[in-house]
Image (cartoon, rainbow, N blue to C red):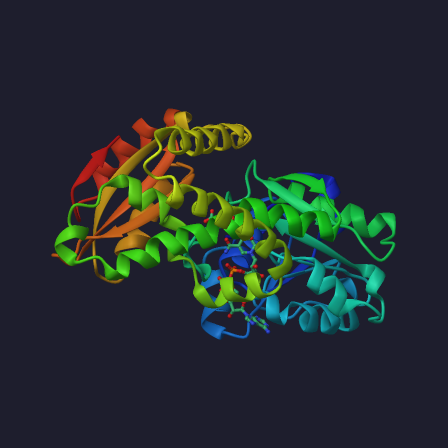
Length: 365
Ligand SMILES: NC(=O)c1ccc[n+]([C@@H]2O[C@H](COP(=O)([O-])OP(=O)(O)OC[C@H]3O[C@@H](n4cnc5c(N)ncnc54)[C@H](O)[C@@H]3O)[C@@H](O)[C@H]2O)c1
Ligand SMILES: O=C(O)C(=O)C[C@]1(C(=O)O)C=C[C@@H](O)C=C1
C-alpha cells in the first residue's frame, strides 16, 4: 500500500514515524498510520517480520533521515522496551519516543534518569488478539478502542500532543492515566482475565479426549485468550506482580467461599449474580456492542496461503473484520475460522465468500 495524501493536516506532525517491532501491534499501527497518510519506517530484529509487515502495508523498510523523524513507536515485547527507547531517544533527536507495552510503571522506573527522558511518553492501545506477528495485523485493530497515554517526567505539551495524535491517527479514543493508575486498571481488566482464561484452559490438559469431544462454545469463549503467547504474557505478568497478586487474593477468597459452600444454593447464586452484574458493568465497545456483530464461520484447509485468501476476499469486498478466532478440527486437516463483522456488512461478506471461497464450507450465526 502506498502512503496516501495526509487526510488530516495535523497528522503531519507525526510524519515520518519509525516503528520498532513490526509484530501484531507494531504492524497494525503501521497499517493504520499509512492509511491516514503518515509515512512509516519499519524496523524489527526479525527480517522476516519486517518484510511481512511491509508487504501488508504497514510501512517501508528504508532507513529514515534521522533528524526528520517526529515519532518513534516501540512495539517490542516489554522486556526490550526501555533499552530500545533509550537507543531511539539518542538516534532520533527531534522525535517523541513512545512505547505500546501492556505495563507502564516498570518501564518508567527503568527509564528514570535517562538522557532526554522528557521526550519519552508511554502509551497502551487496549486492543490486540491472541495471535502474534504481523500476519494478522489490520489497520482497524484500534478503531473505536481505548488508547491510554501515561504522561510522565514533566513531558512538554508538544510531546503529549504527538502521543495523542498517534492514538487518534490509529482510530482510537485516547485517554490519560498515571502509570500507577494504568497498571492497577490493567491488572483488573486485562491481566487477571488472561490468567483466569489460562487457568481454565490449563485444566483441559487433564481432560480425556472423549470428554473434550463434547465441548461447545462456552469453553471456547472463556479460553480464547488462553491461546496468547506465554513468553509475552510472562513478561507482562512479571512487570505487574503487586497489582495482580492483590486481585488474585480476591479471586482466591471467592473461590474458597464457593468451594466451602457449594451445597448452599444461596451462596452459589450470589456468586453467579455478581458475575452477571460484573459482565453488565463492562461498557460496550464504543460504536459497536456484541449484538451488532454477526459471526461467519468458514472451513479453512490446513495449507499455506488459505487464511490469507480468506482475508483477501473480505478485504476486496470492503468488509471490516471486527474480530477473528480459530478452532481446529481434531479429525481432519481443517480449521474453523470465526469472523465477526458488523451486521450491516454481513450480507456483503456472505455474498463475496459464496462467490470466491471454494476451499471449504461456510456457516452463519
Ligand atoms: N498482543 C496484544 O494483544 C497487545 C495489545 C496491546 C499492547 N501489546 C504490547 O505490544 C507489544 C508487542 O506485542 P505484540 O503482540 O505485537 O508482539 P509480537 O510478538 O507480535 O511483536 C513483537 C515484535 O518485536 C520484534 N522484536 C523483539 N525484540 C526486538 C528488538 N529488541 N528490536 C526490534 N524488534 C524486536 C519481534 O521480532 C516481533 O516482530 C508488547 O509490549 C505488548 O505488551 C500487546
Ligand atoms: O483482545 C485480546 O485478545 C486481548 O487480550 C487484548 C488485550 C486485552 O484487552 O486484555 C490484551 C493485552 C493488551 O495489553 C491489551 C489488550
